Image (cartoon, rainbow, N blue to C red; front, side):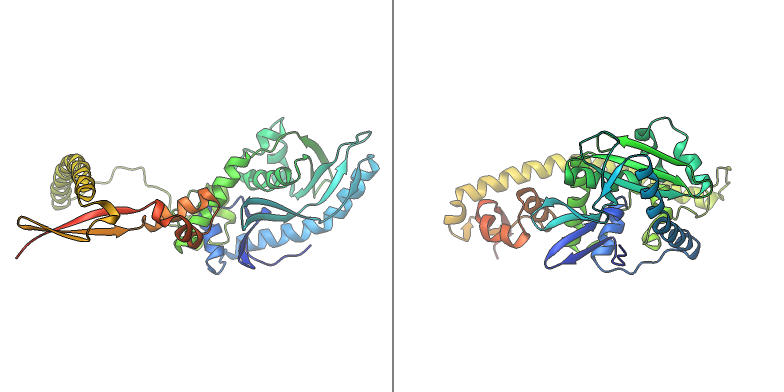
Length: 337
């Protein structure tokens, strides 16, 4: 089933993360949600277009090969959805539901076709679990794990060498990516989506090579290699570095002192608010030469988002339901004129 939508999108106020794209880095998922245009290089896009075309062509042949081996295949391209939290889902289309020869238990079927070089890399480890940990194939691990968790099925993984016709069929007993990891990744992406900001990239080289938003990454996987040779700096540059290093070191020591002082100041602020009677006390108090104003503030925006997802609520619902339970109050102290 052809689907030209991005790897993540909004649909009827719900967030949909495509199973085929859930192996992307969080930055790419958020970029898709925020409407950034895809921008792969021509070489990478050609590889993916060819792989998609060949994959579709070979899928039918793989199913025929499996049926000749007495596998029973059904429900091709059935839509599968994994609920992460209310209004947030991983969705995809499975290649089929399959029963192994003489078996009664349903398993999810995942089919891949590869060039001879990729097939060689895939088949090198003895165990399929080890293959899923190779950076080149990690996105496959995320995809099949989403299907396995959604259906609570084991998986049959069939990989065909497009050049030789060799077919490697194996069973995955457990999802290679834990459900907690899937949820954490999607919830992290949702937090950044609500903030309307892009997170730092944590993707590996394999992810970045195929990334639809590679132009957003600070470091391209095909950029200039690091120069390991010793480079001599002129004396003026060395002097500047020495000055900045000394100041950096001094500020580091001062910052550690300030942390303790800030904690003490925060405790004093809580005592002042308590003495003023909290939210039921006066907003402004004049004491001696000081004017103290109670400032009522909600949590910062990031904390609101974090708490909302922990409770399975939207940020708006969180504010409406819990704002009075999670107040942040502090005194603004000013000298009286």
